[in-house]
Amino acid sequence: MSSITIVVTHPSQIPAAVHSVVEDVHTQLLDMRFENELTDMIPDLQQEHSIRFRAGMDDTGAPWAPLAPRTARKKGHGVILVEFGDLEATLTQNTAASVIDVEREPDGTTLTFGTRDEHSETLQDGNPDNNLPARPHVGVMENTVDRFAEQLADSIVNRLIRG
Image 1: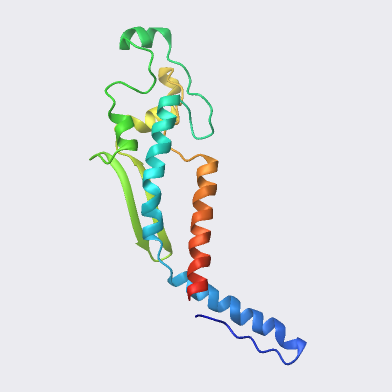
Image 2: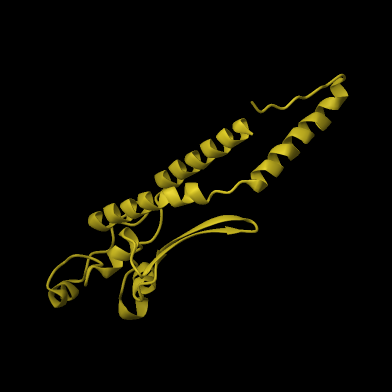
């Protein structure tokens, strides 16, 4: 069992005692590693992107701009962001063009998720010069961010309790 004992013999000692506990928790947090938790989030990110591709929506739930009729005729279909299927695969599977990296850095642990697809940035941001509307396809929905934050918070609390 892990425990913290605070002995206060006079009310004037409370701020120093609380400060000591906060410093101890802060030190423990700085030493924590989150590679496993972040790695566990990758399948959820891939699934979310798969659902959003099928629904044709961005990370706010807004639908992508429809294809211009001329573009749909040229492609032979009206499916948005699908030419060869490679872009979607880079965000929903582990491909050579997927960007999936969990790395411990001096100031924390970072999860990088995205795609190296050469057309992704233009499709994400659009290109007004070519009348191409933005169709944001890389991002995380707010409810997913909230769920991930809860998972990390639970992990932190459990570690602090275990010591």
